[in-house]
Image 1 (cartoon, helix red, strand yellow):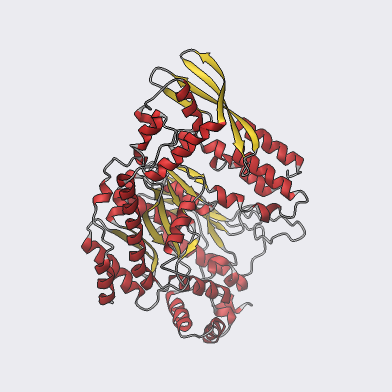
Image 2: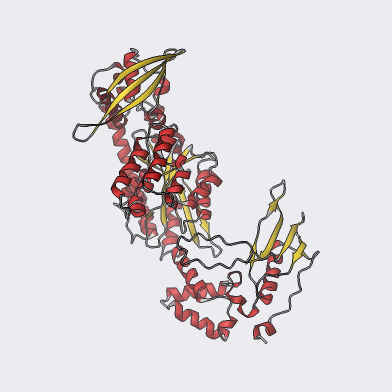
Length: 597
């Protein structure tokens, strides 16, 4: 007889009507029962009452359900434990917190072996004492293999352990991410305390694990919080930048200021890039910003981010970074015999489609021409096309951003101060210098816009109106549209009630000045109120009037643009509250920080 069966305590078989003090107690009971019987357990779907509290759940055999293979190579299928086993207990949660078994199924459709229960995932347990010894040994330089062998010897053999070497290895890998270097925790605490003493509006919050170690951190100064009130319409979020030797991703929330410059709106350090970490970070940021969610956000294709955004920012427009998607073309189709032609075709569809109907038609034709029907990646992109292809998203305001390059440019901004070997203690000291330079850069741009003005391109009255309102960097973009009028002409005008519909032809030129293609665009203009809308959607997307609208305004002799077409976010003549906030990242901050350490 198996010695483990002999020594295992006798656990009462679950029956209907058994009552336990809490959900934890019934889980421990069923886990002990399954260990002695020889199967693993998992928690199935739950049901909540009208008050949002859990009223019902199931604990089932881990072999429940049917496995659906996602592997692409049928010659090497992935193993599965699923046998659609129906063994389970259904549990009702009472109002007083006690739980009761309401139905029981004890029959399994697979063999069970109590002697091998310790290998099942639900029965692998690293208790607090084991975790602490593993961490101490790791810090002392003792290899994991030697640490694990010491546990085997103490237990009297592998059979008496509740965990295996892989569990230990996974724990050490995780703890290394969470473990701060000498002085790091103190440096973070002192830095945040110092910042709050300089500005009561400085906000920070820690996320601690079960052993009270720092897992995630978020902070934002008073200037970031005030600036968000002006620039909360669109932000980018990207975690591809690693700032320190513990592989904790730097997670900046980045917006666009009135110069088109990246502006930091809060940031965090994460130990993991799973949905729970992002949910914690987004909730921390939302609390910091007084519950005001951004109107739009740009991220990469990270599924964990998408889940967190749906949970925390359900009403926020979510867009995927175009650059992150298009850069994968060589990896996905580089081996295709017609790769160059395929790449050019896809770029033309993505960047040059004028209408959704045109985009869909050309996409289907591309799939057919290049025989891409079985491309899972391409099919998944098409399903999510409303989140990344410009023609699908250009009707919404994105401050002109097609990618998360704002986050990447902010990362590049920090590159002068931090690197892969930077400790957290060093990071918080150098973070001051980076933010101070960014603030100084904005102040310099403000001065240049107030103290100097750009020359008009052609003296057109509308151009003079914007010259007096826009910051210089935004004005350069507008001047480019004024110059672009040279390559546009109005070919036809139709009347639709009070609205005139203009057919505008634009010649798209190449780098050498040759005409690459002609593009036809419709501009709708209503004289009453000077309402105007262009098919290219540049104003909706970027907040700056396009060359096609300027052509129509010139034809209709409109010399003054209505205020609704001059966005406040690009103006230089407005006083923004955050700009009057004192810069707390001055020289004595870093000096005080060094002395305190």
